[in-house]
Length: 319
Image (tube, rainbow, N blue to C red; front, side, top):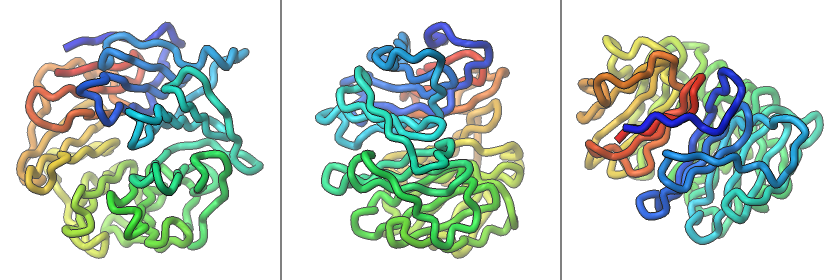
């Protein structure tokens, strides 16, 4: 286990998001979006370098979201959300291009890249003031796609693994969940048994087209799952998951391996039986300062590395 802060940064330089290369086992490349900017590691999260030096910024540019192309190994494409716009890099974070969202440019809270990005070039950006923006030209131009989206305070996004075929995506917002089945052109509210409740995290089964499984993490009402695309919901772990659920990670082999990892404010809980029972991911982790981001670049098998964003002190790698 290695606890290595990122490059020098202000006190409480929160890590908002983490992303790792799809070929992390070989490349060991990962990115951290944090209050002071974007950082890159080439050794699996042990040593980090500031990645925005080429912009020669007069003051820090907060990075609030980060996502990689599914073909990152070949195209080296990185997207970063920032106040009012999206940064793009096509050389793995060495040089950057800034695209502002339509005026008045809102803060970006979440980014999602189409699984079919190499062919369709589609990206979605969630914002905290103006709903969802969509780009179909690899982030060059953006337009608001909010028809039917009754809550424009977007907290998280999740695309179907089969997005190219079913065009399905979900938004977690301040008041609940919204679903689109036409690529974001129109939205419908999804009924949660919690009523109007902030949804902080979403995850879709890798076999969503077959099993229709969705998970939703709420601010005060715990973790929920649906097996019919969101028509009906069941709460999981009500006796132990009593804090805000800030992130959800499923096994890449779900549901064959029904492993679910959730990140709470200062705890990581794992279920190996589809949410029926829960335990600590690893005992004795120094998580008292609070967790703010999570990445599991090699899945959830015992001993697989985790990258944890900390509220005040960089990134913790856990093996």
